[in-house]
Image (tube, helix red, strand yellow):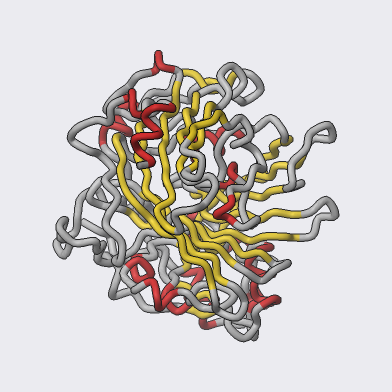
Length: 429
């Protein structure tokens, strides 16, 4: 049963009291209540529809933070990126705050396999002792949080499609779409540790059809030091497949129009060796969480200039692990510093900020999540990247009521021979 009554004292106090009455000790885990995972579909759920009905539809907005009052929360529960959004878009940006509902869950098989920390090897580039479990249930260093995000449960044999959008300040934009299949080797249903692989991913752009890097296959290992990423691309113009060793780090796919790097897909992925990583500790921050209302809204209603339509987003007070990555002196990457916010319950990255070499924020990113309770698992319904220099934003991996559901656990596994250069040709056509 979903526990609907929670301790939301902090938000009630914020809404009803002057800010000077709020003290830092109030911001503790007790104020957001205990976990109440949703482990099975709610009664309103219909597996034949693309909908995920909101388990918390009766919740009311406790507080709206906007340009008039955001300064009261700058030192406590707002992130640098959120503050910048208020400064850049004072007339339109706002955050509707709701009660905290710690609804995230994973399959029982994942929990049964999770009992102790895995082992980081090769300066954090690899991990041993994880098959289908949460790799670091007791994280105590920065890369533990990063690996927990990378290896969080995300299905087994996957197939689906999703659109992407790039919106200009005047409201015009670019629309694209793609399809993907994926095979995970570390999940609890396969448990193939000997493969040394995280998984295999094959994608193709379906709109517009003439993008240069239209189809790609990526093979990712559990140790980027011993077995670096392997990738191939199929070019529809030449009808040839070529090896693509550059699809890593700060490579920018043409579809991103310079807004995101390949290692920013799904928050962060790939090799970690170009940064020094620091664990900034646990913090309480406002994060996009349980955003079912957004998922159930037509895409045409959410695409507004500067940022998505904030009327449909839900923010909650969330306990996060904050990690900072600073570029090493002898390494190159177009992002000198990154700050990442990981949910302590689901291990999802919920937000990221990037900074230039002078420490000025360049980009704010959000990854609003819901519990896909028919699995169950918590994942983002899109990644939103807000570029402050151009005032454009990008939505990737969009999932909504408008889009057929991703199949996260196919009955028939993908043929491993598909994830080859020859298989890529067949998939692309």
